[in-house]
Amino acid sequence: MPKINLNLEPEDTDTVLNKLLTNPSIPTFRTKAQRKALVCILCNVAKYQDKPILFNLRNQKNDPPQYNPHQIGNKPLVAVIKSLEKAKLAKLTKGNKWFEKDEEGEHKERRLSSFIATKDLIKAIGSLKLNANNLKETSRTFVVLKNLGDNLIEFTPTAYTDHINNLMSEYCDFLNAQKITVDGEPVEDFYLIRKYKDWACNGSFLFGGRTYHPFMGLSKAKRSKIRINGQATRSV
Image (cartoon, rainbow, N blue to C red; front, side, top):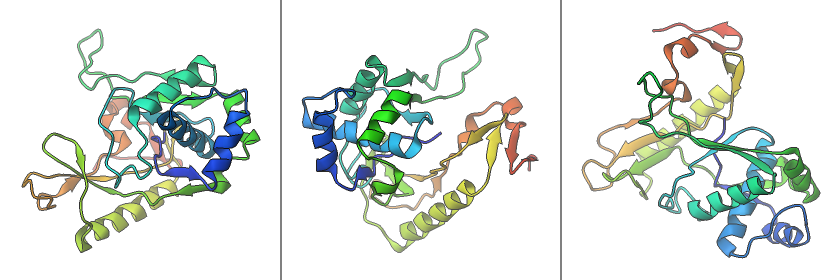
């Protein structure tokens, strides 16, 4: 399940915005921030079609330009998704908090919020001549650095971060070349990042990093149903 890609944009953004003004099937938005968020969402749907697209529904600080080059605000992003849902152009599924428990007192599987484009939205995007072949994608980073407050901070690339970035990029390409399923459902569009914490408060990467797979939050029963290229997996 892909997470919303903030690096996507049309080859000609102005043309898409002008077409949106005369397209009655897609809601219009007054603010520049919401229009920018709308274009980003439409690009994601053009690329991922009717796949569920993950996003953070809660209010949060906008990521720095290094991670969010077009400076798409989370608040306008959420507002646009809710408006599309109201117009029956998207189906929104709310996630849960990491500490939520079920009726038996067990922690629920961590799940981000997601939305799915309806057939009407996909059709409307087609009328804009927007598709996966005419999108531009700013190079995404596979290395992130967070401060002690758990906020993303910008960093100056080094030979080490470039090396890790290349390794993670190759690793994701390898995973995406495989057919991986969980209980018969495909797991696709891997974008795994190496997360570092700035424990020294000096922007260094001295304390190593961590990468989290989407499988790590699965129950033991579900993990047993992972298949890679049709073959069962084993614990090591």
